[in-house]
Image 1 (tube, chains in turn blue, orange, purple, green):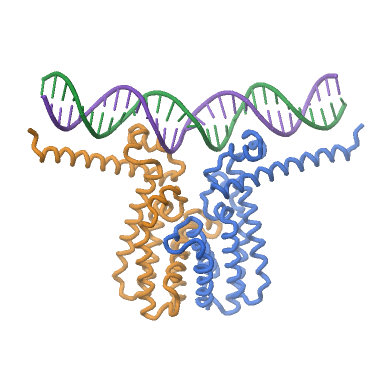
Image 2 (tube, helix red, strand yellow; image 1 turned 60 degrees about the vertical axis):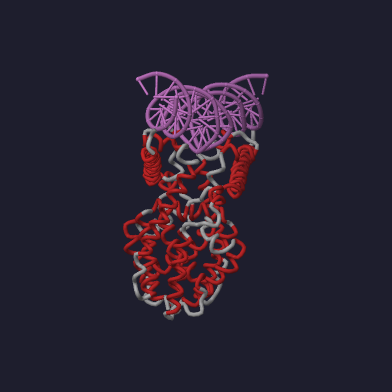
Amino acid sequence: MVKLVEIMGIQERKDRERAEMRKNILDAAISLFIESGYDSVSIRNISDKIEYSPATIYSYFEDKADILFELHNIGFSELYEKQLRVQGIEDPKERIIAHGRAYLDFALQNPQYYELMFIMRLPKDKLCENEGWDPGQRSYDLLVQNVIECQQAGYFKGQDEHDVAFLTWSTVHGMVSLFIRERIQFVVTNDRFVENFVNNSAKLLRGIIQ
Amino acid sequence: MVKLVEIMGIQERKDRERAEMRKNILDAAISLFIESGYDSVSIRNISDKIEYSPATIYSYFEDKADILFELHNIGFSELYEKQLRVQGIEDPKERIIAHGRAYLDFALQNPQYYELMFIMRLPKDKLCENEGWDPGQRSYDLLVQNVIECQQAGYFKGQDEHDVAFLTWSTVHGMVSLFIRERIQFVVTNDRFVENFVNNSAKLLRGIIQ
DNA sequence: TTGGATAATGAACAGCGTATATATATATTA
DNA sequence: TAATATATATATACGCTGTTCATTATCCAA
């Protein structure tokens, strides 16, 4: 008779192999998405890259949107970590500005992740399935918390914290999404976008916050 | 012998018919785009709607992206008209806020036009073909002009006018694009978005501008 | 070694954007 | 009016897409 521990070992190896295959697919997918964008990448492209048949992918993911949804979650985890890294800053005004910078850094360093997190039209059925649970919620909550602490320090007096949070988020999202979707090329070159516009805007915001 | 005027008359009718057919296609296209979005609409869908064969469309437009490009231009004309309508306001501070409201109104009333003007990833070849000429340029120039007049009235002292213009544009674009691409559903319901967030943000901005 | 589970695949379906060769309708000329 | 020339519309086809499913190959337990 085979020992229980051996059965468990095999099961564990199988689980591990499944997880590795999933990661394999996700890695291939995101690298292709970065190269050509979600819409231009086909399941066949992904299957070519990992040297399996297209049908194989469908035994690891429900459909193409499911792959997107997984990458979506990975992106939100990375963003949240970046946000946490500036939470140590004492002065709430400087902290919220650093918070915005962290957001911009994430977006500019991972434009394709940013796309699928905040810009891309998401497949409708996926949104409904996961209704009520949004992985971006805790990032937003952190922002609101920082706004409240700014108010306790005397800034944004008499404003609703959600209005301020939304306005802050909109501003950084606006900058970065106009850049990513190439709507400001006639105003400033790609090279100078960060050093010029973003830095100057941070300075400008620092003056505005009161 | 046939009179010249008759030849011209026939030519004019033909030109008119071609123009009508183009408009017919564009109308069918935008109404389908509004219903289902650009990517989900096929040339075959459009040809079904106008009751012609798919191939016919290709004698009026180069390709699917060309249809998009035409609608793109129509959208920018309408936005510019909306912008001009608030240029009469005397106080430059109130004018620039009304300018922002006009932009938001356009976006919320014509979300599908806004999508293809400012959010959608545009086909690369089209962008290159029309390099250097962007129909949004004059809208941006108008914004910069208003910023300069604000500065002459004592606001935005010591700031670069392009930095201020970009920050202004980013803010309104950020609000509206987060809304259109459904990223703030967990913060506020669709119904209350305009009356709550946008109005409050305008009030907030009015306090911030100095 | 054999039976059963699991994983991978080849083939197929309907739909896509698009090119081209053919057919049809219209306009001009003899 | 009849024949020719031109502009327009279409049928057909190609290679692509996401996805499904029946079939095959692989692995493990008895």
